[in-house]
Image (cartoon, rainbow, N blue to C red; front, side, top):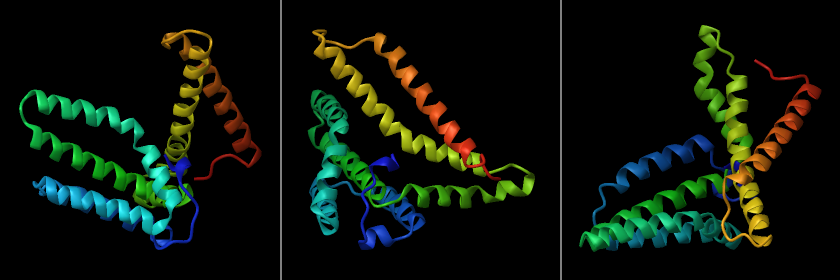
Length: 200
């Protein structure tokens, strides 16, 4: 997730991660009380302007990250269209696009280290009962860091599969994908051991 963040010095980059996530949570709740597709369209335009206020690069990256959502939006729209609920489908799809685009905005303007620090702060009460929080924070950071890497690698394997004349990928890419994941995990473990392991 946080591997896609873009470095910068804008107000969004300078804002605390906790504040951005809290604002995202509040906006997400409030968004479900908006029942007008016109209002939601205006809000979506506002999100686009929000991206542009940072940079054109952030907007283009945000649009790129929305590509996987396109299929979901099409399926939801088709389902509601089949049921004769076109406006309802528009509202649901607009809400989804706004929520995901705002979440991506937080991701693009937040550093991985800041996110891990936030998780460690939230988990700090566990120290009182003897539970080490550093490994948990590291695990969360690793998941966020390597999930997009894993998705990209799976996509590359699928493209290689199709380049060999096979139209559709299947379960055979699981083994090479698994091998690359194990290799990455081994390299990360070596790097952690070289730095003295994980703190408490």
